[in-house]
Length: 585
Image (cartoon, rainbow, N blue to C red; front, side):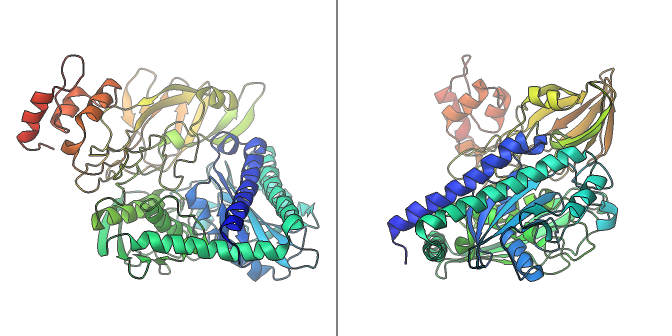
């Protein structure tokens, strides 16, 4: 059994291995979605598939799915050997959605014993869909989606590529040299993890690492049990609704029943009382359903609890088959499984926990994938007509207010958890023929509260010349994000096309939208919800937000009940009188 010192030392060694894997992906990925935004994840799994160590990765990638992926690998390939590598993107066998290409490498010792597995997952700019996007929200099923599906397919044997599979990808993916570069980056990341684990075993021995894995998961479970024991007991059901969408003209109503049982050290999340799968790409894969619920829980508790299979044991996520937020079966499309409904589910869970007890949970994070995060494509005439396709990250949704802090400005969405980087305007304009005309905060879009949500952003971009196609899958225009415990909701999202003469017209909620030279696509992202009544926010913080340009004087007085003098300092006496009259929110 490992003592505290061994747990600390070896846990840091495993963390260092995951960081090395992540650095490899960041520095060698070819598409901007990897080397600019860093939409990828790396983790180490125990031999039985248990998630052991994750890095600074989008939580939607690494919490409720890698164990399912590893179990599929063991099912389809019971005789694992050193030198194997498997490409896995099937949402029906444990992956998130078809756009997330994962490489799994089993770590096999000299005696042929499978000891660990390393997994590197990277979102693709193109995965062979019928339209140039990896988020095909309007797909009625996987056939309309068109993505290449790889249910744990061997792509290396004895450390040599299985060239047949790679040729298939290059014939279906629009910019094959870009995909090939990303494939090599993912594979290289996994092989770096394999080598590092073998080196570590050479230092301390496989048996010591096996013992650490068991004890680390047990320690994490104990930490999670203690964290839950400190919460108030309770049960509540929260509801929400995704905006109307192709295939779901009335939207998608959702509910989550969340039960906290401190005496048992368990949190139950029940998602079974929800609609059946829909003829749209919005359906969640099993991995995305489980993970979205877990993200909502882990956003709401002690952040020092390790995120691994040990702590996950104390959260019971109840799903059913053929449910839009449950367990889909082929050929249901799960093209948009990591964003829209996943955000809604996680938001329901953390808002439910806020409703059970003050001092925990969160309001809602801005939902939807705005045109500011669209997959853009077209022909690049600079230096010759060459096709391009890439997902850009030019503007993020606002983060949620919580019991302690204001919302995180660069949260993006609940599934990414603030791990994705905001694109550099200059690098985006170098990588593809676009011009970003504006990016800035949108004042008065935050969800007001004792701890306010982050504001949304305003982004405008268009083609440098020729045409540009943008495909996205927005949400929150009709049903915006909600606040918690008396906090107000964030401002809704919106999308427009600005014509060459400056006139503005509403754009479709999910594209594709074609923008010609002189036109611009305008994106207003969602603000995050607020936590607690806004009139209880410290007046000095309200005054600071006004000076920074985040909120207006009128909003400060009307919503937060704070009066400012000519220098934008708090007028203490006038504020006391105004707040004494009651609220006007």
